[in-house]
Image (cartoon, rainbow, N blue to C red; front, side, top):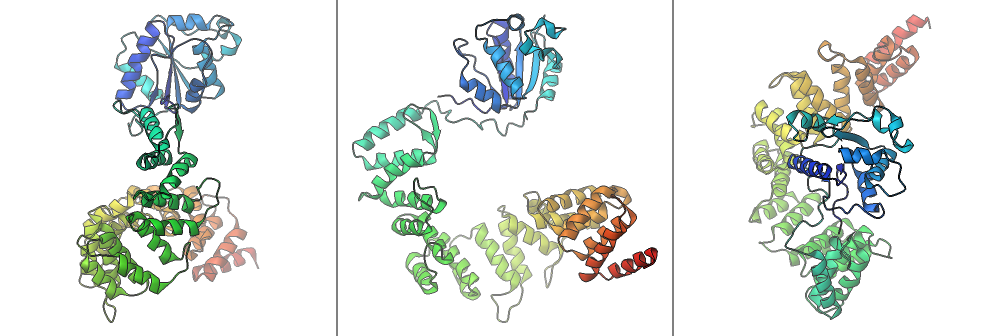
Length: 530
């Protein structure tokens, strides 16, 4: 089983003593620093050039060629025999890989392409790095600086399929297959799981997800009287929902049918059944039937179902009843705390409705401290612009909005940018632009508008960026964005001056309630003598 594909760095070397010893050490040093490296010191260098090496080179970012004396001497010779190093190098060149030659001690790059066969005449023109036999810090740093691959180590195991030396997936699968063929229902279910989640075929090679084989065995389990049939039905239901059932079209109806069959013993199917019922997916929407389902399938210890019931009641305006359900839960999950915070924020549990920011803040903060990003935004927002008895706290606002913003929450990014621009904690235009840019990339129109203004200020002046951001704000119907774009077109800031387009933008701004657009239109008419 070959598990070394799709590495970031491919090390090519000649197995001539110095070449393989250096390559082995280099591989270890790179891997220790978190790089993803393709290297096999036991690779047999004979016979035909294997497809797996070609694939590994095609998928790498950096091709490192270890040029020992034996390697270079062999490359200089025209030969009819297969030369693996040459084939690797040509594959890298043809696939436009980032090639880094490493010159070992006593090796010089050919001064002229004439010293090499015609198909290798590109090699002398590639910048090489010279390494001594016992390389020191300087050349190694030079190499890592030249690599396209990253050394953060986050993807160190990205291609590791099965590095558990104590477990043989191939042996386990073969044993299970034999037991399954002999009628063992549990073995059938385990085989189905292995294929469903991506295992190996009988030969031990990676096959990934194989739904055909998974369904073959899971349907046998489903048709049995074994208790595992409920869990097999759960997986079959998922396949129908996703449209991944081999040879059959996507069917929400069949997905619902199998979830209903699985629900008595599968909490996952039970929750999916009620989800589909609540949304009329694969079945008719029936409010009373859903209420009856909750009544018959929810108990005081089932916090997941209780939360789903509370959310259902909230959706249908039964706010006080929803709060009663939340009060009955033994443990409040962050999602439940966030939902309760929303009820208090909007005040809908009271008659007449009366927002309670103090209680809302308590639940939002509890959820936020458990890394609930939407709750972090809501709590930060309350701290930034409170109402009622809750007092503003800009430092808490910054802390929690940053928590949400750094996790990709666009509205939090916008508000945090606004805080840094206004100096509510610290005035920092660089941070303001950073977070406005983040929000803009997530289609926040107001962030684009803020940037269109900020890029015209002396501290961060860039009229071209201002023009680009104004175009975004204007395209989304913001009157002020249309007016700013009109100004930029009128004066020719960040673009070619164009009074006709400026006039058009001013007119759109006026139509969207921005009165100054009319003033500027009249100015243009006066200039043109209209």
